Length: 260
Image 1 (cartoon, rainbow, N blue to C red):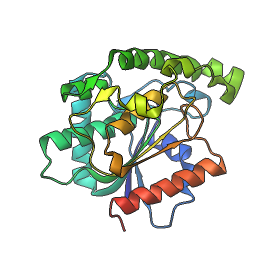
Image 2 (cartoon, rainbow, N blue to C red):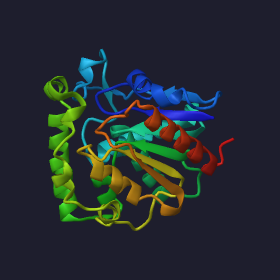
Image 3 (spheres, helix red, strand yellow):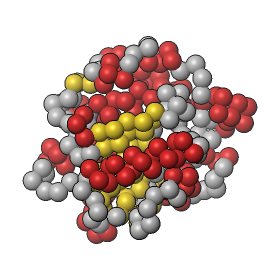
């Protein structure tokens, strides 16, 4: 099994390798992970510089449709040269890249095999810019929540917050979601179609970007998706329960994608 790994903005492939080490060790032998680095130099993601040395990278520099489309084209070129890949494992901005690549594929080249057979999205949402380009409707409330959650993440994941409160910094976020259930959050985006491959969605209810992760699950085929709320923030907790749960979902995605 060959797995494509796409890190978050302001980190790197080697950092992502470290971030997933707790559940990677629980997977069967023979899984080959390919940890890419984004093509652009970046400032460290909030709080990352406390634990990891540079360099740090991003997949694109702006959230414009042209920049994201360009990032997807580069990704597809890499896959053509180094693939095929059975599964993609993504975190934060990597989820934006991977979900956008799947949507562009479904709209433009549905007669060809998708970039990967199954996908695991961790603490990440879709690009609202890409969704609008493709005819998805996003409610005004979802837009407001998206902007507020980005600001909250920058504050609660920043170095001073990490040093002062540690994991306790992920608090007071319920107001961002107005008490809405996952089903209600998913209904905030109207989908002309959905990502068709098997998908796993891993997010934390204390993550300021929690709603964005739920939105991403909502644009994927409900018959082919699984979700897991690890209960934390914008991170991958390393507890045994979370690690075992993610490893189980990894195996499910592999089986659903027809990976041997």
